[in-house]
Image (cartoon, rainbow, N blue to C red; front, side, top):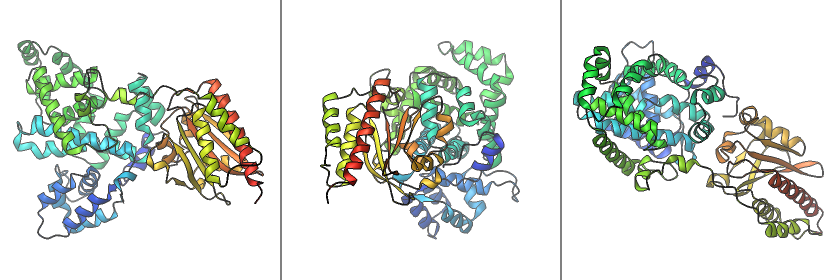
Length: 503
């Protein structure tokens, strides 16, 4: 989404409350066929839908819209489908956008995977003990993070920005959220689940996190004393209000999501340990026994959910102690420049007359020269004559999505400015908030970075090429910037020589 991000709660709600999430094409087709098959039961259809949490949210939101005849929200997908009826459900799903799974933003798919992992934790840890409430636990745990789904569907770059600043750099989460969103994240989540009229246990969980954290803090304090269960029980007996709250079955979905989210960052981190201790207190299970159960559920989740290109916490269970998603998030060390290769490639660009037979050869050499002077991720876009389309010509260090990238510059103020005349934009933490919202989401997905160089190059006064380059998210040193600047000059001269070559 190329519009500037909202900065107030009302603006966020206006944007997100009715946002339709993309659904994987294969799942969308299967569910639509099942809805049209009279032999399928509601339970079978609900079971197929849970493969796509976005479909579950769409049905639950529609069934629980405020102002409907039934004021009590549906607590499960089956009851929501029964309330809507198959005809309305079919019409609703036909309006839902569907995309090949590879085209759905990785950030959105990642948080959907976390929600599905949380559901596995809830089923394995709590549903058996609270068998009569298994549907409420199952669907509540799946939908608990639904506000994040909509947020990342609109602005997928937010996940990378939050992880880098909070998990890697250790900045206070509340400060980062206010800078990125303008409002506290949990307050936004609470407002959305209330607006959607989602199951009461979800709303109660966010109300606790937003307005009544003292109960959670008191419970966490008691949970730390996991080696002395009798003392824990005495503390709970002395506080009847806390004991009643702790044993409420609705807390199971909060615990399941706390376990899944914290494990996404690190199994051994302090946040993960807090949620494990609290879950152990809730279940009255020793910490080592709780950890064994949680690890078993993570493995079961990975066996059925693991997707290529996404991180599942169960992967870290196979690695040495201390390995985690945090390590995977760490940007690689800046690649040193290959000076001899860089000089050779620049020589080819400066050759008179031009030795290139076509623009593909020229852009290949240009991309290699930028890599040789230390750039790890490079994207070269060619502009058409009317500046109505930008097409990817070369890429390095980027996902496969870069090779087929096609952008309409009219949707981005930054791209329009770069196409007017040769210019350079250097993104840094100081100006990233100003310019990031003005760049296409597809570009931000390829370069989840606060340190990025963007340059437009012209021939005969008309911009013909845009270049994007960074060092894997790390700050770009001054000597590297100078080398990149010289490389850009060589590319411009190569473009001029190529345009005037003998035909």
